[in-house]
Length: 314
Image 1 (cartoon, helix red, strand yellow):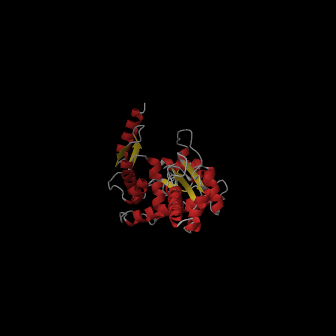
Image 2 (image 1 turned 45 degrees about the vertical axis):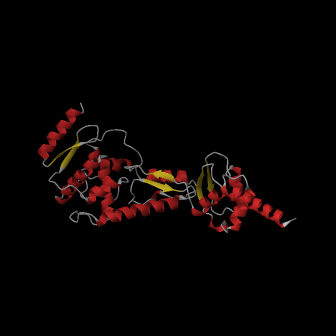
Image 3 (image 1 turned 90 degrees about the horizontal axis):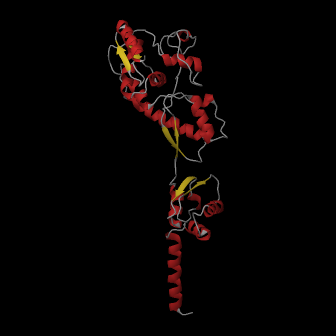
């Protein structure tokens, strides 16, 4: 074989290899795969081949080995769009270009709900109710398909702590709360009192005014929690008898704050407790079905507002 022939064969081989590596190798469809911890290169290759993400398993493995990428492949859930080359696919696997899933903790929900969601994601989890922390922000969190319930919960707690610590450092120094535990407790009560962001600093201010005057908070949501323990909704209206329900959470009976949270509060509820609106207001009552309230600074005015609210609802 002449040198010219060898040269052209070499050029053709190089171009062929480049086309195999750098041109789209998968079928024109979107695919998601999960690379699990501990999977070997052969197992990953078989997975990608079965899902039609690669058409040339041999060259995929060859490229990975030639570039010493085998031990650099990350585990997780990956998305491939059908136009990916072997080079693109290997780059995503090595750089950890993951697809994230989302877990949403709805404002006003409680530990049982979060535990149920975590168990659904990770049925083999040994997490118990007692393992769910109090100081968690109701929000939407990203996680990977390969994450365990414990890992997800740790990340939720980490993000919540970061936000809470920053909020605490910027707090109004005059608020009569000693620590973040108390912030979350009061924020959980505010969360259950209103879903309206603009009212939350007002309601927080009302509660602080009552605490400073040694008045009971007299918050209906604490009565509801006393009865249901956060396990379910109370499918009826509260009665006067309910207000006397014996519980350390019932703020019609106890002075100060409940012993722990009554729900997971959102970010705006936590901020409202650390930055309350200063006023002389001491009372509020829901005035209609969209969640707004009448506010007042005297009991006499409060009684008028209660009557007005009743008339509105007729």
